[in-house]
Structures are given as structure tokens and as C-alpha cells.
Length: 379
Image (tube, rainbow, N blue to C red; front, side):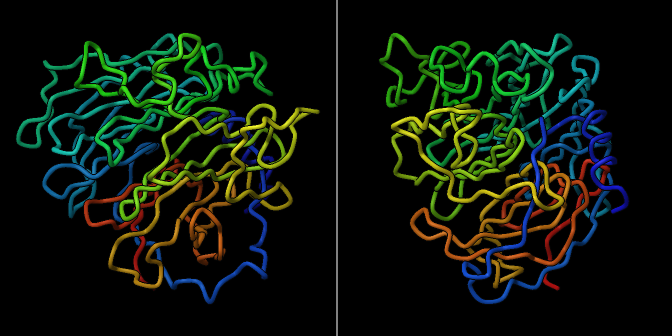
């Protein structure tokens, strides 16, 4: 890439999706590399307009969200015409736009995560019948005002428990000026867990860690996050993995086991990765990342992915695949009991990787903000 840092700064300023970008995907520590990397290739299967997220849909489809507000379905001939369009209700200023989508387990409802014209983070629900979105059933499930145009988070997905998880950034402005990451009376800087069908507009699960705390928001599942742009659950183990974009020095990947009761404090803004941030004091309950990387290379903003559970690339099975918006290299981690036992450079570049998608068979797709939708195939 030519003049990488200057070019990436311009892209982030205009496309903005991943927040105050931090840095460098350094080479994997040789002492922690286990065996050889899986041999993969990226096969372009479609072109989109600034794709931001994807999800497995009904009838073995993959649905792709485009930042301006459209949703399209991936078929054998690429992406079809939009099946849903909310582009007159969102804005792409800063890091805003249509940022996430998710289906419930039965594909009976589609949820969209976007910022509205005022920049408010919004999650809307649509009923789905025979694979078709019923726009007349639309209702708003959750909103959260955003003080700035960056660090919106925006990823949403259903966990193995059937509840909807929603990632929200710290509200923007460099360094978390309001200290939202560590505050329990705000949804900002958090991963939320709600039951969208259990109440009006939603219910808080009784076993949420702060459900009975009068001084905390009951929706909170975990906190201390800066901009958890992408997170996922391992389809095999149920473990949770979060790619949290750093401020200026460290990118991090956080992990929680499927057995976790929630309540994890990932440290921001007292900590950036495993390092005190601007003289911060490490919280006593800090849960450090299982992986971090600094800004000595080309990376600047971690893009969280998925643990690979497909069949096309057996050598990749059980590894967490992720990338970086500025570096674009696909990498993987071998993880055992919450500890990284191997790191791999997978030897392919997906461009400005903004997101991953996983289909119903566990195969992975890579989304680049420039428009490419690529499938991870064996080399």
C-alpha cells in the first residue's frame, strides 16, 4: 500500500467506521506460533456499496448490510436488489450508518442496528415471513443517544442463550472524556443483553449481572469497552470473543467462556489492553485481553471475526479468525481455556476489512468497506 498511514487517515475520516484507530498488526511472536498456518484463499463472491455487516439468513442465505441503509441477500449471482432500505432514516456522517444486523434463531425476526438522523444508536425489529421482511411490523426495541459521531459500536447478534447482545462504544471523543467505560449507570461502553420478545419494548433477563442493582443499568452484560466494533459467539463452544478498538497504542481481543455469568470489566478507560491508559489504575476486577497488538506495524483498528466451524478448510477448524481495518491481513488465534496457544498469519489480504460474516454452515465471508464480499476458501 502506498503512503499507507496518510491514505488510511483520509479513509477513516471520510468513511469512519472503526473509531480512533490504533495500530499495528505486528508479526506473530514465533514462540507462540503453533505449527503452520492453514492454507486459505479469498474468493470474491459479490460487490456491495460499503458493506458493514453480514448474517446467516433464512433458507441458507447470507444477508449483507450496506452502510447507507440497505440490506441485500447474497445469491449464486452475487447480491440481489435491496430487500430493505432505511437509507432515508440514517446518516453516514462520522462513524454512523447501518452498522449491524441479526436474525433470531428461527429467522422469525430481523434486527437492524443503526444510527438515526440525529446520530442516536437504534435497534429496530422486523417480522420475517417465508424469508420476506414484513416492513409493516417494524418497531424500535432500544435507543441510546450518542454524544459524538464516533465509537458507536453497532454490532448485534443472538447468543446461544437466545438473547440479543448489543455492543455500544463509549460515546466517542478521544480518551472517553465522560468515563463511560467504567460507569454502570450508562449503556455506553458496554455489551448489553436483552430479551427483545419478553417485554415492551424488551425485557431484561433476570440473570443479567446487574439486573438487581439499583445503581446500574440492568441491560449491561459486560463493560469497560471502548469501541467493540465486532464481537461473536463461537458456534462450537459458545464462548464470547470481542474485538475492541484501541485508542492510540493497543488493539485487543477479549474472551469470556460460555459458562460466564457476565459482569466482566475489560478495563477501558483505565486500561488500554494490559496497559494503564494515561496514568490509569488497573481495576481490581479487570479481565485482561487474551490477545493484544501494538502500533508498530500497519494495523490501526482490530476487526473482530469468528471461530471457524466450517468444513471447507479443515486446517482452520477451531481457530479465531480476525483482521485489521488498516492492515487487511487475515490472522488466526488458537485458543485453549481462554489462553492463546498459537498465532498465525494466514497469508491473504482482504483489503480494508470492516467485518466478517458467518453462514449457516460455519463458512466465513470477509467484508471490505471498499465493496468486496469474499469467501474464505481452501488455497
